[in-house]
Image 1 (cartoon, rainbow, N blue to C red):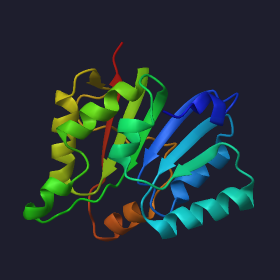
Image 2: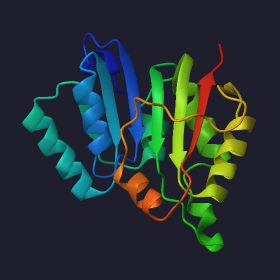
Image 3: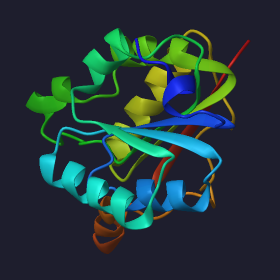
Image 4: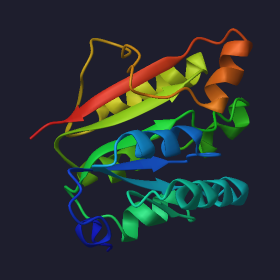
Length: 185
């Protein structure tokens, strides 16, 4: 396990983002909130390189990245009850039905990550694929220890920067769906 308190001394909160892509939103959030620690997980090497260069260019000491599979990171590196928030912005929708089993947001994964949240912490997921949004909402609704902060889909969180994938979805007239659950005590 890693110690976020040692990596980010003095941080007020710990936010983990899964699959930050090219990292525009991640870097912007870290730059705008220097008191918050951000940990990003990504396997796409060009995105990792881009974020590393932005960390250096902006002298961000509150953003670190892990270039590894998110499931293994959560199984082996992240202790329980440490994260104040988990962001998953526009995960790969795997739109073909035969590929749905590859989707990240499924019951075993949500059951793995939910215990990592502190009581009151949040899981925030966005997608522009309506059918995947319904699946995400259903899976999170069934997860032990998570409670929907809204009646159904969440309203847009104004602090979240727009991502490249979000812009692409909007260009195709896709509806952006947001899911926002909090960890119960």
